[in-house]
Image (cartoon, rainbow, N blue to C red; front, side, top):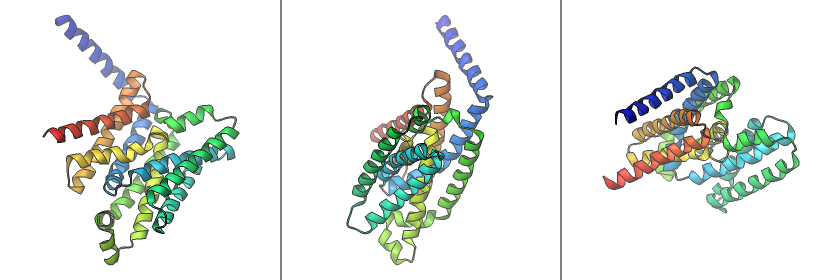
Length: 284
């Protein structure tokens, strides 16, 4: 028992020393700061996405961003900029088409989802210099975030968080009773436009963190987990933000220590939090 205890103690000391060494590295610091800032906003908006039952919309926009990334590769423009513009236009397009009433929202999402992915595949096939960079956009490259990426993420997260906080009251009203919100004089279309645009921007910002394929998880899993824990909107926002921050910080740390993919590790930790909340709620 003593030998085993000593071995565990030695391993723990090694991990603690490795963690201290990692925190002193600039690229780890940039990854953590960027992840924390984006995590705060993602945790807040995730609650409203889950309550409004538009999780599929987040998934649709995130995969549509692939088409925007492909446009960037072909045109030589920064793929983040083209993905941002394309995602916002996709979000507005989905909202406009579904608002007419002739096509349901989930159908509109499916159409944009498929066409954007198809566009991305065709354009990537025309490009001859995408292999390394494309992998980063698809699966995330948070440990490769530059100082300018970090600055942009901080600025974007602060702006988006402020915007959502300013419209929280109206957004809450619309989420639970849209018809009454209309009759109460709330500019529902404008609030929904701001919300969906913020979601599109958050998705593109998160591409550097976990990639196109997994970024929708940041906007769904934390809110879904918080919804299992409490029914209070304020407590849901706090819980969702905490879950997101915990997953990002621990995901970056574990991925560095054990040489794992950061994006996948972050999402797996989020999924574990959801599973724990689900089974504990079911049991107690």
